[in-house]
Structures are given as structure tokens and as C-alpha cells.
Amino acid sequence: MLIASDRSAGFRRTHPARGYVKAGNWYGRWWVGDQRVKRKLGAVRDPGSRTGLTKSQAEREMRRRMDAETASVSVGDRLTVSQAGERLVDQLEVYGLRPTTIAVYRSLLRTHLGQHLGDRELARVTPGEVEWMIAAMSTKRRRTQAHQQCDHAARPDLRPRQR
Image (cartoon, rainbow, N blue to C red):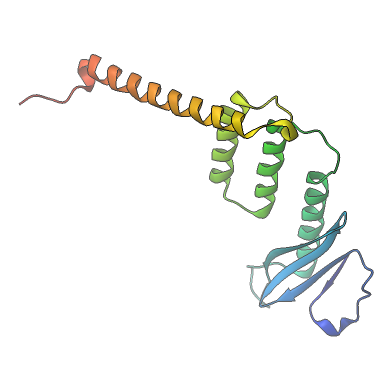
């Protein structure tokens, strides 16, 4: 794995991974199967600064991302909807989405997708099943809202005050 700060370094084209600087950011480029992957790794550290990535930190980040990409893409797997969703969320986490966003995605995956289609093989899910899931979620949401309104009306401590 090589990190280059300029194009004049003369890297071989056959090298499997390469890092480079462009517009003040570190980027990594590598192959996953027959697909070329390019990812932004982070800002370049300015001399005397504590923010940004050094060359060795950029190399480490590129290795971490390469491992995550390679692990998440495998041809021939018969994934369930839940497994594919987990892989997607893991990948989004590697891309640097905020922890709260990742937590929301995992919750949605567990409560909605996992509940309705989680055990189904991803390749065998039909559009009709997805429509059924959306209808079921919509019905459940309406029912939940109705229950909340009934609870609100039944509890004296939640009723609006009469003047």
C-alpha cells in the first residue's frame, strides 16, 4: 500500500492500492474484485497543526477501509434482508456517518425491516412483499397514534386544563 503526496513519485500501475493527496485531502484507491474503489480518507495535516491526517494515519485509515470494503462485498452470498441491511449500515458507518444516524438506521432495520422481511432471502424478495410491509407499517403507525390519543384522553393528568 503506497501513499503519494504528488504524482511525480512514479508508482507502478499494477500496485493494488494507492493513496494520494488532492485538494488538501487524502484519498485512497484500490480494487475490490473487478471494481475500482475510490474513497476520501480525510484532510491532510498542516505542519504544526493537530488536525488532519499524517501520512501514516492516512495509510492506516486506508487499510481499515479496504478491510471493511472487502468484507462487505462478496459475490455468491445468499443474504437475508437483515444481513444485507446490517452490511449496509456497517458500510455507512465506515463512510463516516454520525453515530446517532447509525443508531437510527440500526433501530429502523431491527424494528421494521427485520420484523417483516428479516428472514427472507434478499434475492427472493418481491415488490409485492415490500408493498405489504409498507402497508403493515402504515397500519401499525396509525394504530399506535390512535392508542396514544386514547391514552391521552383517558389520563386526567394529560388532559388540557379547563379554565
